[in-house]
Image 1: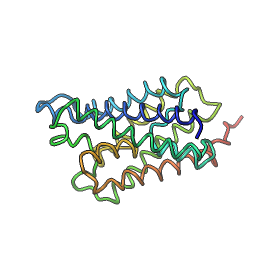
Image 2: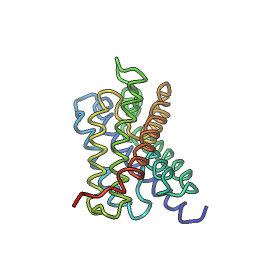
Image 3: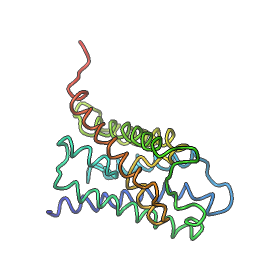
Image 4: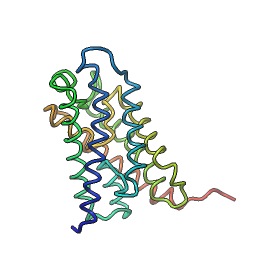
Length: 230
């Protein structure tokens, strides 16, 4: 590995840590403080707005994937080198841990004991299979938007940060009441690992990755060659 992929991976680690820190801080604030602080809408906005800012800030540095499902999806369609994909994914997972640790430090022990550091797991009455499908679908939507606005020269690049951030927010709106709305293996990995909530972690590692690959392949093979009829 040369210095360029390593430096880009460091950017991925920092960006993922910021995304997880801000989002999970909003998620645990009420439990950690013992008073009503934020509602579900605030958590959705925390993740979505933060991703808008990060894509605008780091998109030109690393591509700002901040999500193993994005990296693996792009690599599977030849839009990102496999030689760098591994270090990107490791950096993103490490960023997820650092972000969750930052939330723990900021909000104290109650953030873990009462808020589980924002760990994601299927809600009551939601089966593992249902949670798997939901996480796959919402990540499919996110990665489809990412691939479209970030890799197709016909797309308006200036709108990419807003489109990607809004796509993440939309995914959490759908999945939040059912799965907690990870939409990102790294976002689930850090909080669940530090909160020792590992029983359903496999869902959040595998389902988004499959959804990301399917979205990238669909865009690459079917949608990218399309043009509006004249």
